[in-house]
Length: 211
Image 1: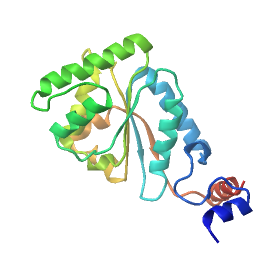
Image 2 (image 1 turned 60 degrees about the vertical axis):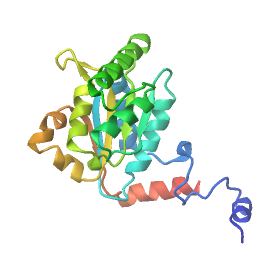
Image 3 (image 1 turned 45 degrees about the vertical axis):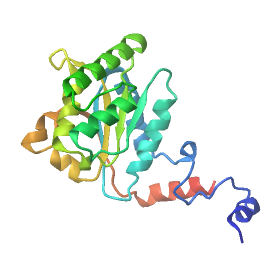
Image 4 (image 1 turned 30 degrees about the vertical axis):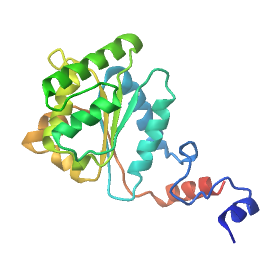
C-alpha cells in the first residue's frame, strides 16, 4: 500500500517513526526542556553551551529543537554552521554569510572587526546575543575553535558578543582537555551529556509517537 494511503488509513499527517518529523512534533524529554530553558537565558548573556553524546542518541534532533525554540524569540538571530571542518579562511566566509557581513578571507583582521561590529550593533538594538549552532563540532579545526572564542569575547573577556551551541560526539569534550583548547573548555556555561534512554523514557517516547 502506498505511504499516503497508509497515513490516510490511520489519520496521520506523517509517519511518526521516520527521521523527517516536523520539529514542533518532536518528543522532548524533561531534561532537554530544562537545558533549552537555560540556553534561552544564555542568549541574554552570551557564551558557550555543549551538547554531546554517542551516535544515535539525538544530538541533531536536540539542535533542531533549539533552533525552533530560539527562532520563536523576537529579534534573536540564529545561524547554523553547515561546514564545521572548514579551514580558517572558509570559516570566516561562512560566518560572514550567516551574519550578513561581506568578508574577505584574505583580510581576517577586517573580518574580525566587521563581525564584532555587527554583533555589537545587534546587541545594542535588541539586547540579545546572536546565536551560532554548530553540529559535528568535533570536526572543527583547533584554530577555528580558538578564533570563535576570541571573536565572541570583548572588554578583556568581561563581555560576550555571541551565544554558541557546540554539538558533537564524545571526542568533543576530550578535545577541550587539551592545552590548545583548555581556555575554550573553561568557558562552556552549560553542558548536556546525552545518554541512552531508560525503559521508562523509551515508553514515554513510544506513547508520544503513537499519540
